[in-house]
Amino acid sequence: ILLKNRGCESHNVGQLAERFGRAGRKGEIGERFAMARWKEAGFDVIDRTQEISFQKSGIDFEIKKGKKSYSVDNKNNLRCRKDKIILSIEIMKGKKKPGWFHTSHAKLISHTHTPRKILLYYDLKKLRETLKPLIKSNEIKVKSVRKTCKMVYIEKTDIRFKNIIKELK
Image (cartoon, rainbow, N blue to C red; front, side, top):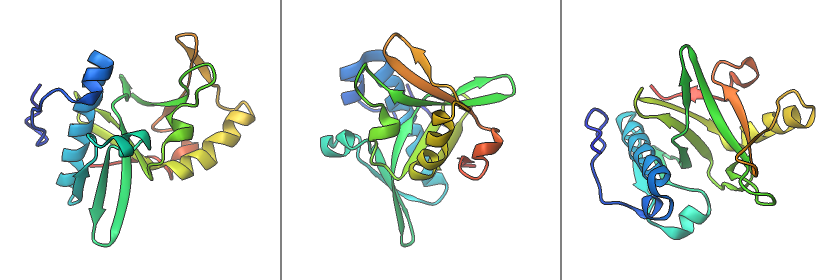
């Protein structure tokens, strides 16, 4: 699949597609799209998608502008419904296996929706600090998906996250 409009290049099937098939391919497309968008925004981008040690830490790429540098974990999982954009946050990925919300070592998480060319991002530490108490107090519900996976869904416009979730334009 070639993503011409955002500088994404076609590439050979990578480790995500090899390991996870169609879902992995979707993830790779999102990573390429995200890296191209950060480049457009004036950042230097270092691709870490083929480096196992970075992947195990939940880091897909790094961005740098001036003296500031950030690691990024991309999720190609934005849900777009009419006038709503919803972020999917993986809390648990198995019965006893924490999801990326708990395990990623990335400074930033970006969520993409390639058909609509949307990229939202946030500082993972800040999201954790805000979301954990909301889950604990039951203000935000954790939902079960496919028996063992547990997710939280956040609307882009949720006022509780207005200073955390940003859109890369």
